[in-house]
Image (cartoon, rainbow, N blue to C red):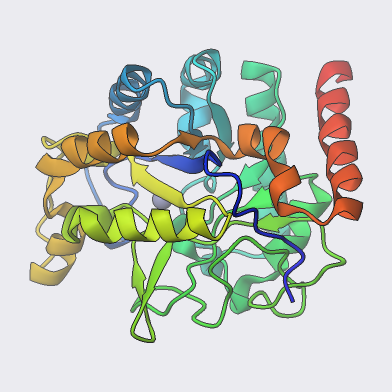
Length: 317
Ligand SMILES: [Zn+2]
């Protein structure tokens, strides 16, 4: 049984918008290529994303790759100054299955100090590159908990050729450290799984990214409405490089090229449609403002205490 309760009365419960801040050479099918010339466009593309969100007065969680944060601390400041949240998206955008507990712990610590120095805030959340958090890499949960993270949004609750945990819940839950696909009431870390739309016994992936480029928007509308009717936020994501139709394109073969580059020209208008139709915010603002709708009453005080603790540590560090 899930520890989280729905609140069907709250029609204005916001959804969560995520912006994955990564370079054009970070996607899974591109990162393995040896590139002689890795020109960085992340700052320029993130500023396009900031402008888009300003236009719709929407706040979001920016999952930033560590090496971009290290190179451009001013970008973190610009994100936070606009009222958004900075969270962690891996240091070099390598999937967790290429890493281990100790290396990940070092990366989290390094990222946290970069964010803190640039913005005065501590990092609350994580998204694994390529949704690589599954039962093979569940050791990462311990690192996140030990580092004081309050949430994760890395579980993809269906099986794709690259990733996925098909038995995981499709609503927010507290992942068990034994089995990431199961809820454990004694855990405090929130998991906000990628958005799927259940249809005829299947789960249709509508998390954003490639799926936002390839599927009709009607699936997104149905999935968001369904989630909201159940009293939970839908989590929708896009990548900064997807707002740039001019990124360098490599020859990856037909399938990989399709997944990586198809329909980039329509991302801006598709996002604009969703941002004008639905209410969105960041994970941080959601957890600060709306946990009462989802949590068992005895858990509310625990979460408030954890949020206060994170703020106090940030204030006195
Ligand atoms: Zn990514």
